[in-house]
Structure formats: C-alpha cells, structure tokens
Length: 428
Figure (tube, helix red, strand yellow):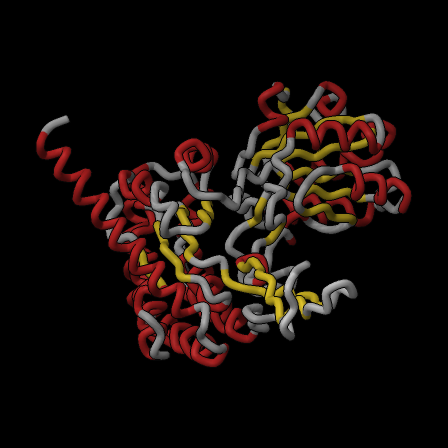
C-alpha cells in the first residue's frame, strides 16, 4: 500500500468515525424527544421538498444524464428518474409518516406476576442508529430519513453514486426540516462521498450503528452480508411469483398478471415467474400470452407453455432464479398447488408471491405453505409496499425472519425494553 493510499484510508476511517459518534449522540437525545417536534420536522421537510422541487429535478437531470452515459438499463433509469409528480409524492410520503402514530413509548404489554407483585411493562423504544445503504432510488433518502426520525432513530444515509446529486438535494431539505424543528442536526446524516470505501468503513461501526438496511442489487446485498459487523435487515432480490391455479377466474387473470409484471418492471414487487396449472394451460394461457406480448413483454417458458404460443421462447434453468427487473417473464407449468409451493420455496427469494384461485382450500394451502414475507390471494404482487399496507412509507421489504419481515415501516424500526416498578420487593 502506498503512503497516499494509506492516508486516504485513514481519512475515510476518521470521516466515518465522526459520523458514527455524532449519530450515536443524536440518537440518545432523539429517543427522549416527544412526538410534536418530530412531526414538525417532517412537515417542515415536506414543505421544503415542494419548495425546492426545481432544484431537486435539476440535480436529478444531472444524475439521469450520467446514468445514460454509464449505460444503465431502462429499469434502473426508471428507478433513478424523478418527475414533478414523483417529487410531490415523495413530499406527501413524508407528511404521511408525520401523521402516523408515534411508536416510541407505546406500552406493548403489562402484567403483575402473583409471586412477586412487580409491575412489569414491555415498552417500545427506538433501535438507536440505523445505517441505510441504497443504490439508484433517490426517493429512499426522504423515505428512510422520515421513518427513522419518526421512530426516534438517528439515520446515516449512503446513497449510490448514480443518484448522488438527487439524494443530496433531497437530504438538504430533510436536514433543514430537522434544524427548523430544533432537533439535533446529526439526527440525519448523509455520507458526503461516493467512494465505495465509505461502505466498508461504515460496516465496521458496530459501536455506533445498531442495524444496517441495505437496498440494492444482489451484489450489494452479498457484499454487505459478507463484510458487515452490524446486524442487517436483509432486503434480498424480489424474485416474485404469480401462480394461476386451476380454479382461477379467467376474467381476472390477464389484468392481475399484467399489473404484477408490467406496471413497473423495475420494482422489487414485480412478478418474474408465472406458474400455471397443467390442467388449464391450454384454456387460460393463450389469452394471457397474447396480452403479455401485446404489452411488450418477452416470455420464456417450458415446453408445455411453448406449445401454446410460438412467441414464448425456450426457458433455461437459470430463468427460474432470475430477477429480470425488465419486461421479461418466465412461465412454468406445475402440477397443482403443492408443486407450485415447492417451486416457489426452492427458487424464490422469500419476498412476495401470489395465487390466483377461487378454490379457498387451495388458496389457504398456498398461504400456509409458501415461505415468503408477503403472500397474496387474487391480487397483484406489486401491492408489496408499505404504503399500500397502510403503513405509510417503508424502508424496505425484509426477506429475513428475525425482528422484522415484509414491509419495514415505522413500527418495525423499534425494539422494546422491560420497565419494572416495585414497592420495595427483594428476591428471596
């Protein structure tokens, strides 16, 4: 290692350490702040996002131009792009978080054991400091900052280089909202460099950061999983399925599947594989395939599916485990609900999976058997979203099983402690 590289590493380490210490100090203060100042900060920030929409869109234009020069896919450019409507929706999302009930201090349970007479309560508390590492979605800046603030947590944001200018413009609004409300400025911090070494240093701050939330592609998630000394809310790829059971209502199929696949192909709730019962392939697949082709979706299927429509290309084994994030869908024939469950549990990412069925027994078997954070009956997989669940914004969809699973909203960004009140008891 050269002397210059060594100095640069030391500078990055010192930068991240300063950010971590400031976040920890802010979190200790924020945990004791009542609801109203947090509500004020979020409403101020939402107002500033709207007032600075032109600046945010100008910054986004720089990022979009850079993304095109880098050769980002259409799906990634869609994730990166901000429009006036998306900026307004982002501000509204912050306001919606402000309106939510404050989880901090909520009494989750309370009881008195007969043998000792202690008054014991389980009370909701913030996690502390949350590090959010994300890639091309600049709106995550507002969503994550708002949710962390509402739940009494300090946030350290690390956006991707593709969205750096957009994220910074949004962050400035969030930060100013915090300042106007009289809260510690370090409640919300953004890493001010695009150097990938910052992520490595961030993952070492186990004394200051309580949990890491990674949002991005498979390679990013794998790197963070391998390197982190800090617990993670894993947000793995969205390899989502829609299963068409033999009892599915033909009138519902095309509308649901087209929405699940094509509404926005670059979101993690987009269906990547359609499973269909062998008994109804010849009756239900032709119309669906025609509708998908008309919508511009490339189809890759097994031999049985291909026998129905010549536009369906041959699928390989790799297709069953691919998150396309594009206008491509895999189609596989299965022999009933248990075969569909087996396929999903083997190839899926435990994100979101749906069944289209009028048979309630088959639907319940699917709901009970599929090991995913979200399971759906007769609706689009693109409802996999905290806002659609009535939770306001979300920080991600957790595909793990510890602490939080599915949409991670404000409530899921808390833990709890036990508050014990006595009247002079001693233990015999």
